[in-house]
Image 1 (cartoon, rainbow, N blue to C red):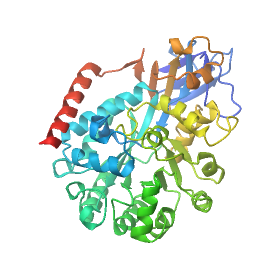
Image 2: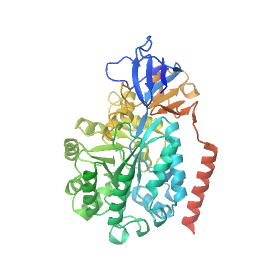
Image 3: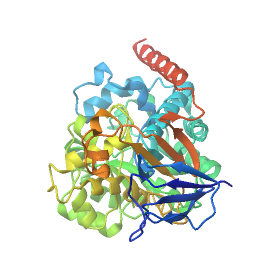
Image 4: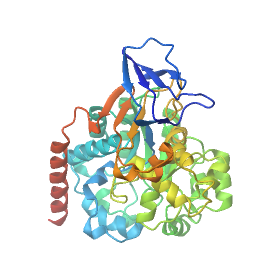
Length: 453
């Protein structure tokens, strides 16, 4: 195994507490083996060096909620300028025509975008299984391995269609036994719960308005037996809260408690519209929230109460959400978005650039139960993102770390996942991006045409 000294970064963030790592980090294989003090040299013999003197060095960013397939429906005319429920209703009829090749290309494109933005781990929520793609997660598993990104693929589900009072059309829902059978199959086939795992599986009924109470309960039982995490959308909009009150007679958090989901193996997407009492309960139970700032702004959903949740003990991480409600897959941009939107709710002294970076690294790692990620430390995984400040947007900046966030970095110069370079000189390794972009664009056109036929 090659031992590499990533030498003398311009700035470094995310090292273990009270550690001076100003001289960089040393990696061997998939792990970090030494933090080097500023002005010092490694005690560990090394084979190679990487000159990081023009780079800001971070732990790899961690995306805690996405919908890779939505890269095919960015800026879709029928979905523009709408809030969540009408936005979904305009898109369900398009997504019903997804096929296997589209899922593969969408997964590769989203992974490429994420890696190029400094993201090394991503959780994807795929909940659409039309008849033509009942093996969507298998397709995704192959694609993320090819791209070299760590992934937590969540086996999503929708079982409550329009005819039974749900939001999605019948063409995109499945029967519950098929969902549970496939969930178990995928866990057995792909889930690796070990430290340093490149691929894990979680179970993710889509939302209270698209699955039944029974499916929520049975999925919880299955996840508990198999030792995997649970994920769902919750409290994203007031419409969703009203739906829960009308259909289930309770607000979303009480509904979660009724179906057995109030425990530390659960993380929620969005988590905007909670009362103080509900946040108290989420904190006591260790239920986490994936904050999705750009999506929340685009759909006008509201502002997540991140600090209130954190102060109560609820883990909070960062996410880009789907590429039809963002409309991109850029984690370093999302760090800036989180800082800006949260300053509308909290004081600038509370929402700092360091806080925003923590959200995307150790906060997200805590949310996904991956303690070996999100921090630069001995024995931690060698997941690294290095950014240069050599664009016009950074000219005249003083603090390199603050500039990375405040001046709006958008692309990493180098990215390492498990000790393996995936991006160098802002180019994705081993991927023909021009070809992928052309094939992905053609697939998006086919999807729109199929929806219109």
